[in-house]
Length: 511
Image (cartoon, rainbow, N blue to C red; front, side):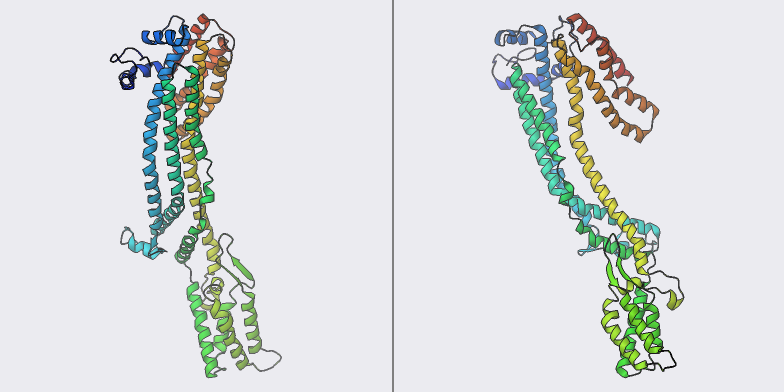
């Protein structure tokens, strides 16, 4: 192939010399690739060697067509440069994706000690907090909550490691194929049809890869059950931090039951009345209904009515009414059996959740079940926060993958339409693209710039971003003035391009 401006060596077909020539003349290719032909039929952006090659080997004699082909050649070369740069970055993302998965896995395991989720006390003993900080310090609890939440995020994100690695490999492979297609388009730059198909193939590959990567339903690959042990431990620690006294109440109930069983064995029925009444005082503090706690996370399900029915039967023995004598032995036997069959087997996993200490000690403590309902909302919000973080991370990753390809399409079409219109001023379709594309492209660009402006909140930044985002509207304004959607003469097209170039320069300086 013919070189751009001059030759290096005398061997025309040596590809090494061609590559060396491209590298040496890279600045000239960069300048020519951003050249928007002014429409002046006398303007030449091709070299003599390119003119001789196109006229003799390709039978191209029209100067506008030559300008179009050589500008397109430089654009293909610059596209190869940027594509190769992105390829190296994509290859570098592969090990980074693997390292990221390992980092998330370490974050998930950081909240575990010997395979079990760490408690608040274990966190205090292993953390780097000030030694004066105690378990009642709110700041210590906030630090513990933050660590638990990051561990939950790590457990979820670590499950995405294989998808991240697969996506990194997919993008790297597709980018490599895209570079090969662009190299082939550069090699066949003078054969427009072949080169065009190669460019379209490379564009499709580079665009399809991020598109298909964003179609992966990541939620289907997540096992949310890994958070269940974390939620259970955190809820238990939260109940303790909020002042839960149900363990003391369950100990008192168990102690009374053991005493009653012991009295039954010794046959001291007359001495058991106080213990029987105290036991039922505790048990009657539970709700008299079937309870399932809680809506967000099933901690227990128990029918407390059987507890109340048992205590009613004990009262019937102790206070038969009608002047009849109490049946202490029957009450003791029934209570001992009641303790063995119902109370002791369910005190830890169910009954203690409904116990209150208000009646027994005069303290106004709520039940563990009510505390769980309150604390459970906090745990639920914590898990929802993890889910939102997971969705946000994946959404931003997909946005970062697909958005560059989407944003680059409209300005590329606009510049391509301008070059085609300059080459063939009598055509109308390129003019339609020149007028319509700014209407589609500018609002989308401003939507992205708006994020930066809201983060900074600077008035001068607002003005600059507005000018930069809506600068393509120049093509719409001047295109409407010069009726670019209609066939134009070379002189009219030259005036239009001169106006566009001047206005673009002014807007670029102001922005």
